[in-house]
Length: 98
Image (cartoon, rainbow, N blue to C red):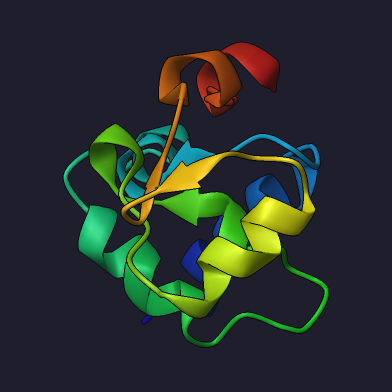
C-alpha cells in the first residue's frame, strides 16, 4: 500500500474529535479514492499508536473491531449490539470538517 495514501488517511483520522466517529468510506472519499473503503480498513491495521483507529467504523455505525466498542463507550458514545446509537448525530464528515 502506498505510504502517502496511508499518511493522508492517518492525518484525517487524527482530526476526528473525541466522542465522534466516521466511516472507512468517508475517509476513502476524503483522500480521493471513494471506492477504497477496504484499503482504509487495511491501513488502520498498520496505524501508529497516536491514530485513534477506534473512531473509524463501518457504514451505518457498525463496529468492526470488537475491542473498539469499549474504547468508544469510554469516549461517551452509546453502543448497542456493536453499533453506535444515534450514529447520524455523532458522525464526523471529513469532507465538511476539513
